[in-house]
Amino acid sequence: MDNSGIMNSQPRLTIDTIVDWLRHRGGGMYGGEAVTQLEHALQCAALAQSAGAAPALVTAALLHDIGHLAGDGNDEKHPHGKLGAQLLGGLFPPSVTEPVRLHIDAKRYLCSTDPSYWSGLSEASRRSLEWQGGLFRREDASAFILQSHAGDAVRLRRWDDAAKVPTAITPPLETFIAIMKNVALQAEQTI
Ligand code: FE
Image (cartoon, rainbow, N blue to C red; front, side, top):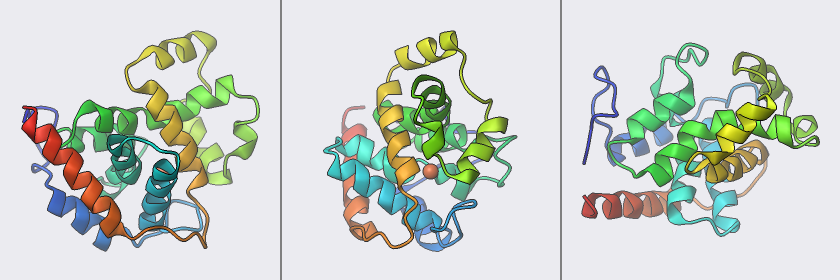
């Protein structure tokens, strides 16, 4: 598979590394929220699955913040959506990587197109909106939603926002590892 999307400084990501990161780096709190990174990822994937999302979008939901686990923590300099999409590009198709890349701009889109959306955001998410670029202007919102997979990024974004419930029960990580492996395998077979 084309590996060119991965930054030179990053080793090629493998499924085993992703699983290792989720298991061993996912225990930290999810920036300003009351859930861990792993709980957040599992809740997001579970919401996608409950909504009947395709396996690729369930995988994107599970991995949308992988850039947080991989990066240097400087989200302003190295936005985690872009970093995550670059890392995942060696393993997964655009139906996974594009919603991951676009899920931050999807917040900017929703803030400018859905009047009730901003008030439903957590405090931490409202704060980060500022340095993520703030609300989209009308023309930016129109251009955003025309991109491939932008609709899926918006769906993912709503699950992302809802995946912050401290006591939520989800399927185990193993359930989503199986889905993720299948999506990667299918992508490999279509090359
Ligand atoms: Fe998230």
